[in-house]
Image (cartoon, rainbow, N blue to C red):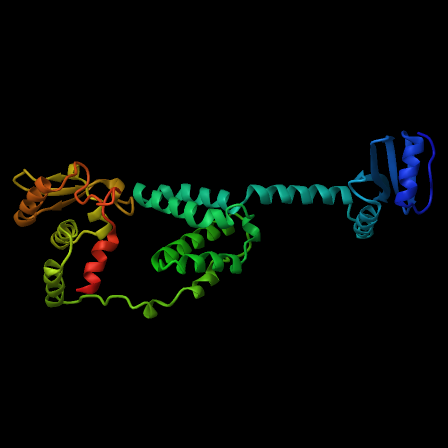
Length: 334
């Protein structure tokens, strides 16, 4: 390699030297930093230093992608590491490893692990609903962020945007899921705190929501059921309400009921709810609900009326079945 220029460089001097010499040259900028020129189109900044009585070389990067000014700034940072007896080459490897780990441990990657784990505990329906909520409301906003970089303000904004759509229950449910994901990440050492814990302050307190008071006596329960019977509602919603009243099943279970689950012609009519439809998979068998003669007879008549071979309460808008809001609204206004 031929000799070059020594002393403080300038961009003008570098460009002129490369144009004249073209290859196999070395330009020193002083302080241990120099530019190795191997061809008219290839030059690299390097820094020679000693640490633990060993001479080493640190590659800063290519010129002109890394300008003279930028190389000098990085040199200052490198020298600071050497003064602290830290090898800059080792430190760069650690930094790249951490960056790589952060890109692998995105919120979406960690949340997917958590959902897979929870899938063993949840019913298939509950698991699918939760996964859809993440895909719809969470991943588009924070899915690509390293989970360690997510702070309370970011989580609060996600929850606030959902709440502003007028779906408090959805916002509350998603916040519960976020708490679970971040606790899981903490347990695996992927983040140091749970930024979802403070986001609860974004949502109104339960006492401020105006929830329907619980019915604690049979007289009140009878009144609301009779009022629902006489309400001006569609036949499908009325029949769903009747099934709720006679079986005490969850509204979500009722609207999702399928004809294949019912044995109406038996001497003891019953409704067999599959284990997969239960919210928690702790059951080892399906859930059997005996049906009294009155509701069994009504269901037989309803089967002849409704135009559906799958769901008891098909959606009039073309969906699978009616929504739970249609039944909840009846109870709210009666």
